[in-house]
Image (cartoon, rainbow, N blue to C red; front, side, top):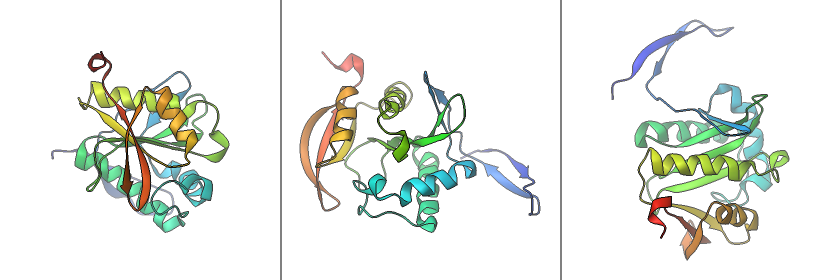
Amino acid sequence: MEGKPARVDDRPGGAAHLIPSMIDIPQIETARLRLTSLGDRHFEAYASMLADASSTRFVGDGDPLDRMNAWRSMAMLLGHWALRGYGMWAVEMKHSGEFVGRVGLHHPEGWPDLELGWMLMPEQRGNGYATEASRAALDYAFDKVKAPRAISLIRMDNSASERVARRLGGRQATTIDFLGHSTLVYLYHPPEAVA
């Protein structure tokens, strides 16, 4: 993969070093939000979100993450862009840059299909941000990635995520056992594929 030229990073307290700029993550703006590349500036809020049990209840093993594993999560999401050409974005308030959460496309090894996923900071829930940001990510999946479909994997009892999936036009296709949990599979198709 041919990357952009490396740039020098002169961070306070450290020697200048080269950072390869091999991942080109597009920025998307909606009415209220900006979907942008996850970065150092998001880490404190990102780690706080993943340390909150209400945020992690329906993902992975359901347990909150410590700072080290939050860092690994962020690195994995950034690496997904390099390996697949799409991935998760940081979601920020457009007017302030405040971190809202993450949203995007996910298809690591072992996943049943291209997943549209979202996670918001606890204080940002209930404002329609998950739907707004996810709609932009879903449009990206169909317009840019040219995905023939996308899914959302939603654990049983996660009624808030079910409501988001339905607002996005998702329909429950099946229920599967995924990562040891009974999981609803919501299916999305490109607008022109819906008759």
